[in-house]
Length: 87
Image (tube, rainbow, N blue to C red; front, side, top):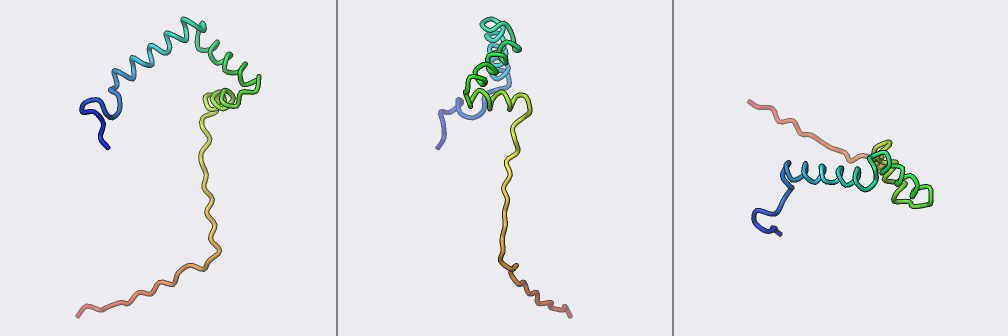
């Protein structure tokens, strides 16, 4: 299903940069800086908030890679090739 013409899809680089700049300004203005913001995250994590703990760990160590282990005990299928010689 299509969105509104001219408004669907990814935001422009300028819009993303402006949003990031505004977020950083708000962090500095309301929390004192990035370190203070992470300290608040850590405090909530220490109080038992799983979401704050997960976010803090993802920023510190990166998101864990998703692994999918596939096991199959069946024998592989038999494949037969017929070679046709060209005359």
